[in-house]
Length: 324
Image (cartoon, rainbow, N blue to C red; front, side):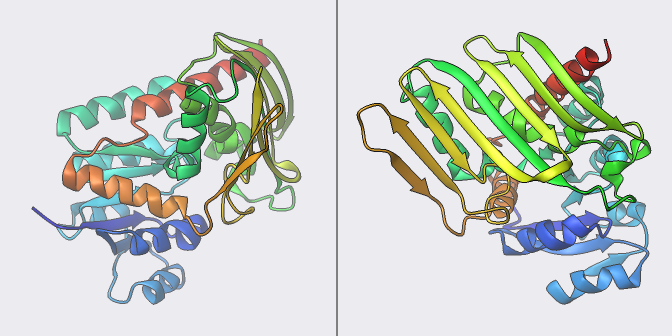
């Protein structure tokens, strides 16, 4: 059995260049072996990171290569399902940038193909691979803040000046919720293990066919949810989990190490606050290492496609409520 995973990347996306290519190269039991791009200029930074990387002229060529075991797909959102399925049919494990699909039902064909081939297919939902979110789940499920009351969260940035960005384009599956709603909605589901019973309210602003700001409230079985997503606000990342006996606040909850350092604080009445810190932990590296371990050792992957499908189902319900 191989002792490492040979990774390929479909496309020379900026995000892949800045985050995932270095993570793949840094992760234990993996290396970046190939890139598919027709642009020599875009290939150059990857070649500088990984001397000897093989560069293919198109995506089909990299999928046909025997020198690649798994591929990472950072293409525009509307292409994710197509290339996830092509990768699986070509015998490659596949990690697809979020959102894997624009509708929950579109996950089903990928899940079926995953099961048919026995290969690993996953959405690149890096936050749950960070030990900080494992700790949040442990504290909540252990009852450290008592009964849950409110999950309050914000994720915002401002890209209005970047008019060509795929997030600002309806034809490429853009919008704030498709981009970052997976974090505000998905972390609540991950920590609690609960699904929303009802989307109570949606306030939403649209520009050129994409949502640019939203405030959503929802009722879960044991708590109330309030979440803001925006790509027209000053950058902010915030999570506060309120219980009847305490509160957990999460610093830089979604982009630790880039937005700010990862911290978690537990406050309870009459007790000194406790803070945990994880300096230097890179959740992209953790994600790749967990993927490698799942492929090589059969280890359980922390975020299966069924979980990702559930988050997309919540996103679908939000848009249905907003358009009703």
